[in-house]
Length: 279
Ligand SMILES: Nc1ncnc2c1ncn2[C@@H]1O[C@H](COP(=O)(O)OP(=O)(O)O)[C@@H](O)[C@H]1O
Ligand SMILES: CC(C)(COP(=O)(O)O)[C@@H](O)C(=O)NCCC(=O)O
Ligand SMILES: [K+]
Image (cartoon, rainbow, N blue to C red; front, side, top):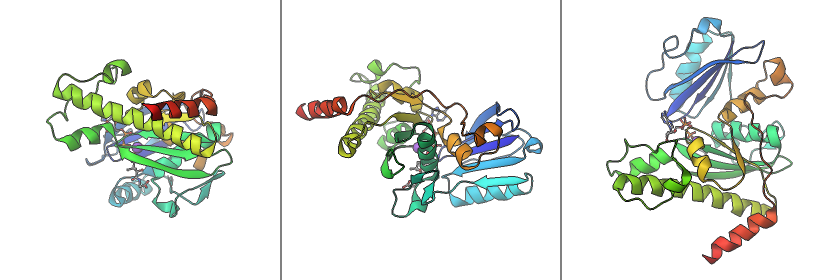
């Protein structure tokens, strides 16, 4: 069995994947800031022969996790942001400083569709671009929905946006504080993503497919007008591509990879951008 770990600033996500069949057996998440108890929080480590880790938490969290796992599991692979991987050239001046979850997402997106816009809606919302040909341009980091809400300190932090809400409702003016905050941060997130996408496609002269992942991907997806696919396992996809262990992975397959819609034409993107400038 393979244990994949995606340690984010808020949640540490895990999944167990069968080495022979490539099937996902189980999955879960625990709070990153709390003590992580293998055996209690994740299934029995005795069945695990390999672990693959992507972590953006404090270095100490990763060190502790790796130390603990090295005693119990034969193979431990830790992903790092590098200057180049799988045909993608990292756009950062200091490649190692690019969040490794962003790097995994960009690599997975590129492996699936080639040039792309990879969006991760977690503690932070990150928007990364890879051009056809593999040049990673860098990206944008804005606070995620929960961080935006907490920073306002209006006593609304415990009232999360219902992930089942429709975008039309969430984009209306709020009539209570909690609604005004939820609708405001939702508008901020989706309009930033739509705008960033259009600006960069316009600048680069290319319409790119878009992929969305992260804890808030589903609800954000409803407000994003750009054609896109939601891929909850996108960071894991990067781990699979970097450290292929199963037959399917060696053949370039990533679990749960979605069908990605064709982007709209560059002309349409430019027309939309020009129109929004008039308003
Ligand atoms: N059940 C949940 N528990 C915690 N956060 C959730 C949950 N469902 C959605 N979220 C949202 O997802 C975000 C965490 O998403 P995730 O992608 O796991 O973040 P990170 O990778 O930064 O840990 C939270 O900030 C919150 O807005
Ligand atoms: C931007 C991030 C905080 C996003 O992390 P997340 O929201 O997924 O927990 C993370 O990718 C990170 O710590 N990056 C390092 C800084 C950078 O990418 O420039
Ligand atoms: K993120």
